[in-house]
Structures are given as C-alpha cells and as structure tokens.
Image 1 (tube, rainbow, N blue to C red):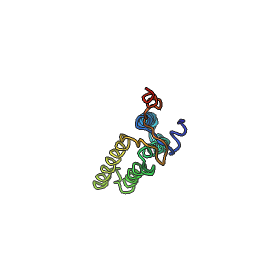
Image 2: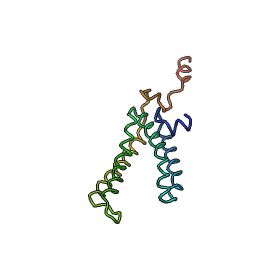
Image 3: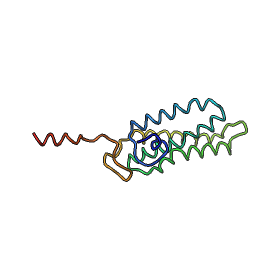
Image 4: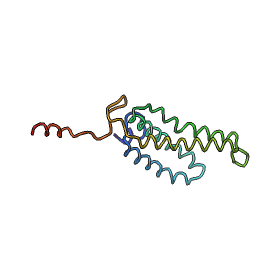
Length: 146
C-alpha cells in the first residue's frame, strides 16, 4: 500500500502492527506543530484526516464499518464545543461538563486501544483480503509430495 493510500484513503484494511507504527509516527509528527501555539493548534488538524483514514482501515480489518471512526472523534469534538459554549469566562468548564468530558475521553481512549489491539479478521471480507500472514503456499504441497 502506498503512503498516499495509507494516509488519505479510508478504503482497504491495515493490520495491528502497521496501524500502531503509523499512528505513532503521526503522533510524533504532530508534537513540533503543537509547539506553535494557537496557529499550531489549527495546523494539527492536518493530522486528523490521515488518522481517521488509518482508524477506518483498522475497523475494516475487523470486518466493521469505517464509520465507527466517528465514535472516536465526534464525542470528544462535541465535548470541546460544549466547553467553548458553556465554559466559564476564565476557561474552566462547569463540573458537570468536565465530568462528562472525562467519561467521553476515557471512552475514546478505551475504544481506540480496543480496535487497535484486536486481532484482524483472518478471512477476506467486504473490505479486502486479510493482513494476517497465512500459511505458506508451498508448505502443504511439499508435505503432500513426501
């Protein structure tokens, strides 16, 4: 899979190892951008689309819809919006909003690791063939010949 397909297309499947490597690289690449202050906070959104595509491919590897990626990004985004709308003038969210936010963030992290660590579907599915290594083609033929 090319880097373009890996980062900018939600089609196909990706195994656990590749998911974690690319996810880590995206996270590390976003660190220097975040140091740019408010401008960096806007620029870090550039890393959002590739990560959504990566997560959708991981969902596909499990035989699930890539739209599950929305559960990872929409609730925390709505929480951020709620803090902006209902937060106190000093930037502190009300206790109820903070509590809901903590549950949302913890839920997103658990969901991320659950999808990221789950073993992929070994059989081909609607999203493509398996990323898991299968038996070597010549191994059975060599056994039967002897």
